[in-house]
Amino acid sequence: MRLSFHRVLLWAALLLFAAWFLTPLYVMVVTSLKDMQQVREGNLLSLPSNPTLTSWAKAWSSACTGIDCGGLKPFFMNSLLMVLPAVAVSTAIGSLNGYVLAKWRFPGSEGLFAMLLFGVFMPMQVVLLPMSQVLGWLGIASSIWGLILVHVIAGIPSTTLFFRNYYVGLPDELVKAAMLDGAGFWRIFTRIVLPLSTPIMVVTLIWQFTNIWNDFLYGVVFSGADSKPITVGLNNLANTSSSVKEYNVDMAAAMIAALPTLFVYVVAGKYFVRGLTAGAVKG
Amino acid sequence: MTAVSIRDIRKVYGKNTVILDDIDLEVASGEFVILVGSSGCGKSTLLNMIAGLDTPTAGSIHIGGRDVTNVASKDRDIAMVFQSYALYPNMSVAGNIAFALEMRKVPKAERDAAVLRVARMLQIEHLLERKPGALSGGQRQRVAMGRALARDPKLFLFDEPLSNLDAKLRVEMRAEIKLLHQRTHTTTVYVTHDQVEAMTLGDRIAVMRAGRIEQLDTPQAIYERPATKFVAEFIGSPSMNLFACERSGIGLHTGGVELPLSDAQRSALGSSTSLLYGLRPESVALADHGVPGKVIMVEPTGPETYALIDTALGHLLARAPGRLVQRSGDAVHLAWRAEDAHLFDAKSERRVA
Image 1 (cartoon, rainbow over the protein chains, first blue to last red):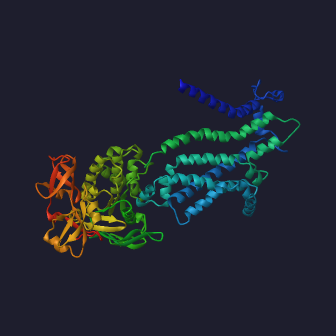
Image 2 (image 1 turned 90 degrees about the vertical axis):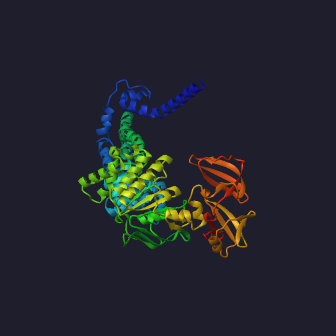
Image 3 (image 1 turned 180 degrees about the vertical axis):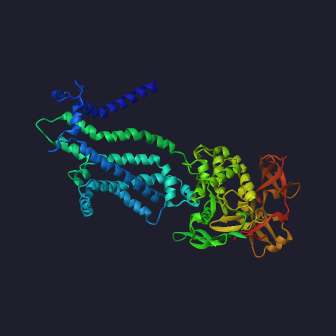
């Protein structure tokens, strides 16, 4: 009896929290499906009486951001072009760094790692001015390439941290055995260490994808007219005021901007759990 | 012919943490040499240096007549079995065994043949497709040995390979390692902290302590003539009985008891005034006359029985074949032959006679 009472309490609390966090999403979804007439009635929580996808279509391809009226599509593409290479490169460099810092210690490697850690906690704003200077020198200011570079550099400390801490847990003897077997630095990495990295690889990919996709500050500072990422596009779309505030379009646009990260969590989250259990085999 | 030669090896961490202190060791071709000692004695560090996984502060290492002190592990033609086995979890058993050959660009057909040959030898043919995670401890141990065997190396290194196994399996695998060595005659250096492994496997044993080799000799010589108090106590189970004793004239006494000495021992005493008198438990016999004592505890093991006896010398463990009629509390007498006693100087702890 006592046990089931606790169960009920637990469920009630969990449901309450779930409702608390899901309500905004609910409001976003239903508002995006309403037409303007129903939006104006002001019943935030009511279901759409005539569900329609026109706001989604408008947000995607014809909503105005400033004077351009091409919707979020070009921004979405910019973000995609930026996020894929940035995530791939920062994850690759992070795993290589982590491998070196965990398994090929050299004099000063711990100090280097401490400095990298500092990079994890450094506020992004600090690098804005020096970074724009560097991008200018490199001739890639206001371009997607510049954004990719910024995100790769900004991501390296945390990806390195993730991989390094994971690789510290791999037995050193695996590396020693491979050395005796005749494998060198790269072969040990590609044949032994990387195949054992699935769980941390997925964690890092999720982390980097979310961070880079959702980044606004670097996106707004370092992008040019043709290279603005979706977060900036969304901001401009919501701030472009005509006579009426089209809340349904704004909500649809926000949903579009958030969908890729949701998608990554749903898809990769499954692999994450799978990877954790599969990788738990100790040598 | 000398297979491995270790010359004046020193290892110092930081300013003055001495891990290895002037180690000299020659291993003959085909020989099975054991490095034994308690943890922290430097035996694993020494093994890692032979493997090329650690570098000495001073001194040189030669394998097959070649100075390999600064040669990378993979170019030393050695194979090593680790305590944790260090099997590659992402590869099948066959992949694990073939990995070293693959790294050395051996053609696929030859690799497969080598895997099969080794698997037959170790009776793991039915496991070849499995991943290490799906194997038991003993099977992993076999695969680790198979991985070392596949390449037919000049030198085998074992780093406490049996200490992760349960007692029964340990005895089995010990026998297998011995049989394997008898068959392949590959030069082997084997690190362990288990004196039974050392005694049963080794052609020669190096007993190490605090970065030095205390004694290097055949198992029999080490057992019968331990060079120091440490070796005497370390080798042999149950360990040797040792009593502090004093010179009195030409003899030795402790607790008011005159200790029996042979003429040779008497003349070897020299100038030592305080000594340690050691007796292996099997040298002590329960007798009708001799040093009187009282049985405190009887431990039957089956084939033999240990009896702890309180005497004027102190507590003394005797080892008797079969069963004992005496019970704890019984009064007994202890006798031994003087020449079975081991004498050590109390200060230097070195063997006197």
